[in-house]
Image 1: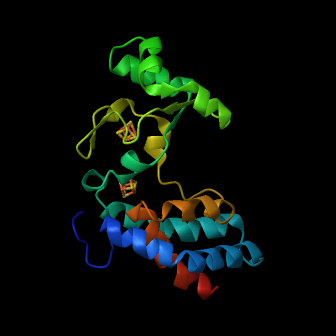
Image 2: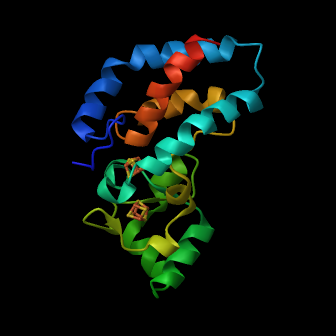
Length: 177
Ligand code: SF4
Ligand code: SF4
């Protein structure tokens, strides 16, 4: 269980239950944003970042690591080079051991970690933090184009406390637009 922050929900079982129960509510928010002609994409993104930044700052990912346990992690050739160099193994050895090129290419990507949880996760910490793939560095992504990528963001609400709490705070704001 993650450290409690008074107005944030961080318990992973609770997040999963609430995100599933509130999915229709989040989808209605998405429709409302897609239909909104008054705000530009940039204005919506600014509103979302204003909500997201305090949530990101308040949630300690080192007590969670649910994304490292649950998500497919995609890599670019640059990610593989950086990781191989950082842990001092040939790229070919890294590819053989942990990266599935075939499965990734079937999804239009270059590479994907084979294992879930990630093979580099130690407890709740990343053992290759300085060399981790770009997708690990940027997750969770809210902007740019929040309203046009919200479908994917909603998918993550059941596993990521940051996403759930950001969507939870956005619902009443979008209601008032
Ligand atoms: S490389 Fe590190 S940050 Fe990325 S999924 Fe694996 S453990 Fe998590
Ligand atoms: S990004 Fe989300 S799922 Fe990943 S460790 Fe942080 S709070 Fe947990």
